[in-house]
Image (cartoon, rainbow, N blue to C red):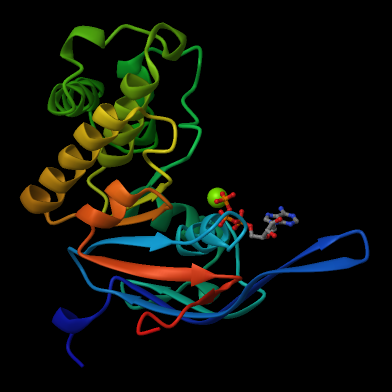
Length: 231
Ligand SMILES: Nc1ncnc2c1ncn2[C@@H]1O[C@H](COP(=O)(O)OP(=O)(O)OP(=O)(O)O)[C@@H](O)[C@H]1O
Ligand SMILES: [Mg+2]
């Protein structure tokens, strides 16, 4: 198959086991998932079904116990930790459920942060960060620190930070879980717009009906496996 048809994400038979003392916790029990460039999809499942674990494997934050995770045609098992860091920095934007903003930095500095290892002029980094914050409607809050922002505003900073390096994909772990209905809907519309304009691939984990309604495809996860959608 040619490069044009290469899936951006390909997970094959991925399992993940955690060890709690002598107890084995099977968080994922053989997941197959293929995501094409530009998709806007949700992984839906109850608490404990393995959503965060799957996102962490795809985001190269954790490695599978068995099975394979390929990003843009590259099997991540063969990469060194430097190569993995580079892959994360250039191809993947991560929006964590609790935002993970750095509390001592302003909104602008938080968004600039993923560019810090890039060899581009400081002025250019600042310009990009400002542009993204404007795109998420925060031009009046550039110099606010996370504690000086509302939950929805923090979520917007996290989205801007995930987008600033122009990644091929954004992984968002329950992006609306901490937001009220209206703010959640606004944030989703914003991501949908970025998906349409920049062709960025979006992968959400969720149990929010709003997210499932806006997603192009919903992959049901149950007890560490992709449940049969036909059932
Ligand atoms: N670091 C860990 N150590 C041990 N067990 C873990 C660890 N992380 C996750 N688990 C276990 O793996 C299973 C899947 O967890 P995961 O966090 O992926 O679920 P989730 O679908 O994201 O749930 P939630 O909706 O509550 O966020 C759970 O049984 C959880 O207790
Ligand atoms: Mg989770």
